[in-house]
Length: 433
Image (cartoon, rainbow, N blue to C red; front, side, top):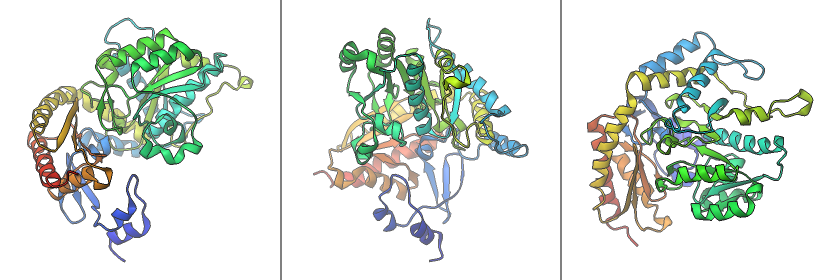
């Protein structure tokens, strides 16, 4: 038992992975990468078709982000953010607040995101938002507002608070004894009725804007987000936008909320925040919510939440470099071009006999095959076939996701789409029940 594969099977437990299957397979062990290409320890190359689980924006080993981390290492890697501050965290907060100033698209709004609270990943960013919302109403002397509303098939992370507002039975059912009750709706009309009856018990509504990610890459009807903002305003309910997946250009704009001129009361960011280099998350909120936590020490209005690596200098330096890349390399224009190419390629897959739906939101593509029972693991099998041909991605059930980094070349994107097409044909031709 000397090889890395043997040691992996002996010591590791991988996330969202059935380890019985893993232990029976030969693992891919990634050793290096550049741009949109990953290389394993055997020297084989793979296209990173899901941006290393939706995190990598500009490609692996981007020289500007790499150099920013090296430069920061020459100063300091980390110091506590409890009772102290640091320059990269301050500069990044200013940058994020400036970027979100464009959310309303110039339309009049009473909302503006002005404060940044750092954490470690998407789950913790959303956990922060939920706890802030609950404590905000306590400070406003409206302690009855303890209920959260979330949508069916929602996924907001894996810590217990966000598992509570999640709506995917497969992921969340085992933890029900640990969770708090949530008001759940499938569509806006249900929420309107709920608001009429019990708005004074509701702390916040939680949504992934424009598209639900781990719920199957399901698209929201256009205009729903703007209507939701109006409804929350009407009943004085907070709106939490989970932009962990959708932020930083994935939907075609820097943030998904921009597309409907919506400014939420709290917004969670992570995944692409550092360009896919380091764990870092941010929860942005308004001055009104921030001010509710101000008071004398003995009032205990303090937000009692934090992480050991909050405001980590390396992560913040990487994030600042990531945002500079957006500016200096005109990334949003590149995303627009890539999205058009993706649309053409996806459209060609619609006629495949085993494709039941094709969905796209910006530079996010999703191809659903079926219908197949879950025990056939058809999405997993399609992705396994793609892997044989040098393209790596992961499915959401029977939906295969394409979400490459923005550095992907036209030829690489075409190859991803061609391999997906051929893999669906090869895998599902005899698999329909």
